[in-house]
Every structure is written in structure tokens, then in C-alpha cells.
Length: 120
Image (cartoon, rainbow, N blue to C red):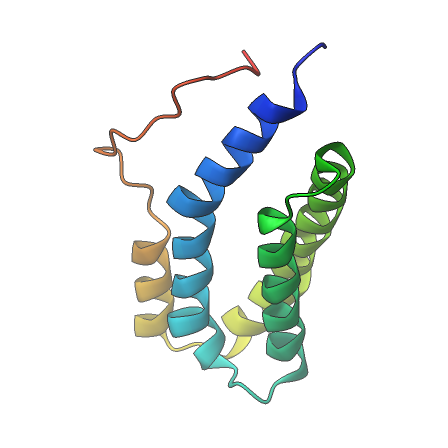
């Protein structure tokens, strides 16, 4: 495809600051608390958040760092969608589920679109 590692890294850095940090914070503050901090699934998710933050901030060997990030982020998303969130849905109260839905509604008024959409 011929996209430079620097362009991909710039997007990675932007995405981390504009999307990931807020997403992780919302999950950790509101969603994971439904199961509790001592729950093994929550502990795994929190460990994965730490690892993903490290990968998002990695500055050496950018191409391999991006490959590692892609692999681990994909696995994390699958874990949350297929296992963790199903367990949360089993025990959450209706008002908790409503709050989660509200937290995950994308803000359509966001004007922070990335300035270099190299993937188009």
C-alpha cells in the first residue's frame, strides 16, 4: 500500500489521545464496576488496558509496534464483546445497561476528524 510508518504512527497517536483513553476510562469507571474489581474477567480487561496503553505509546520499531498493537487490540475487542460484556449483561440492572448504552453513543457533533485519512 505504500503508507509510511510515520503516517500510521501519527494516526495511532491521535486515535489514542482522542478515542482510546476516553473509552478505557469510561469502561473502567462505569462498566467494569458492575462485576467488581476483583472479578477475574475485569482483572484481565484492566491488564489488557495497561498493555494496550503501552503499545499505543511505543516509539521504537514502529512497524512491528503497529502490528503488535493490531493483534492485541483485536484480541481485546473480541474478549470484551464475546465474554466480558455478556457476563456484565447477565447481572446488570436495567438502569446500569441504560447508562452503558448512553456512554457508548458516538458524539455525532465531534469535529475532531483526523486530518490525514490515508486509508481511503
